Length: 82
Image (cartoon, rainbow, N blue to C red; front, side, top):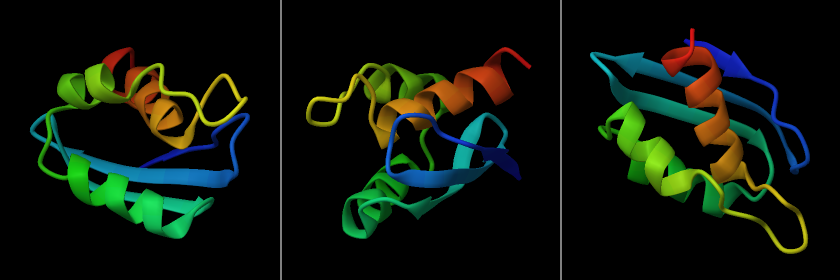
């Protein structure tokens, strides 16, 4: 299980699991519960690179980042570039 502390968003932590380059679990702590449960459900079973491609660069309101963008950055930092 990986753990990431997002920056510039409402969620306080993102915990996720990768098996055979596929996302098997994502749990956000804090943030907008319904939206984040939806994101978690949508990325389950998705390949790491595909999730990064779909989520990276998404902003939230006037913020330059978002919880999905932070998940993409976490995947890059902890899985791809590790």
